[in-house]
Image 1 (cartoon, helix red, strand yellow):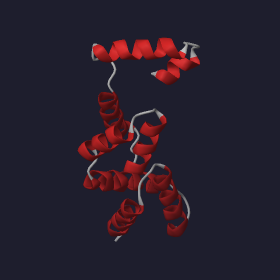
Image 2 (cartoon, one colour; image 1 turned 45 degrees about the vertical axis):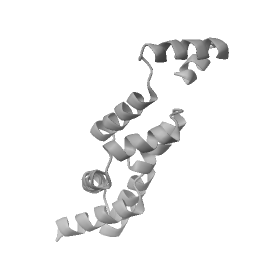
Image 3 (cartoon, helix red, strand yellow; image 1 turned 90 degrees about the vertical axis):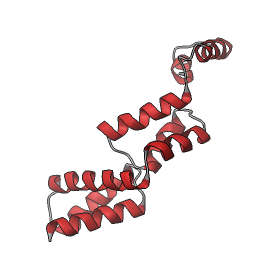
Image 4 (cartoon, one colour; image 1 turned 90 degrees about the horizontal axis):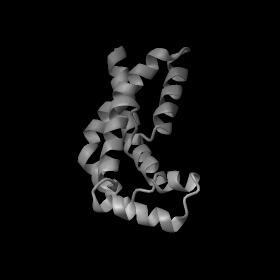
Length: 131
């Protein structure tokens, strides 16, 4: 909210007053924003916990709110499942031999914030599916 107001040239003092008034009437909530962002990403553009953390941090959400929202809405099992589903989708789109295809999939997963353990689970899942 603050970033948008700044881009539109709203002075900092006015920004503070406006945000405080919106918070008083429960129209601005970092907690609700973080939860909504995570749910939206899971449904439309899957991200790993690292990716979600980075995106929310760049939006100005406090670290403790990010931690709480991610731990509530993105358990490690769900993150691994999303990585496997995304890897399978990306695998079908790639050309080349298995090594080249996997490297492109691995890089895409990493760019989207999936950690090494999720990437390894996705690799194992792809190998099992091909066998």
